[in-house]
Image (cartoon, rainbow, N blue to C red; front, side, top):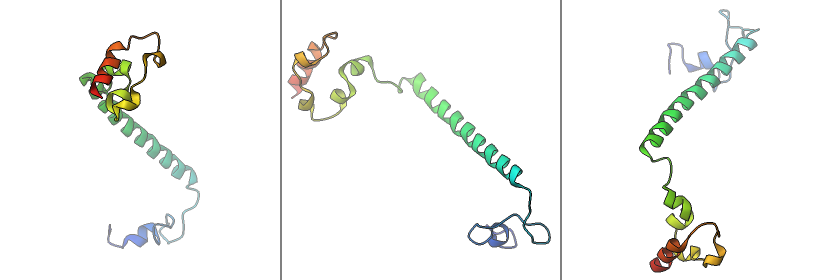
Length: 112
């Protein structure tokens, strides 16, 4: 950036400097407004990223891409997606007694 006077005139050496009065001295008593400006900046960034995240997640939810199918949830994402499949080939005695995994076990053993 060059606003006619050089970057160091506005930002100091390597960005370290102060806001100057017309006579070149550092301004005093601007702590409150500087903190307020930083707070507003953080608020705007949170709102900006929150709005675009909400938009993205809404589109993903409406298209059904935000969640796995119920079958994958029942089987478990690890056994459905990750390899090797033999690492998840467990006897029925180790699986939850409240769910019927017989079809999953037969699919897993036949794929191995």
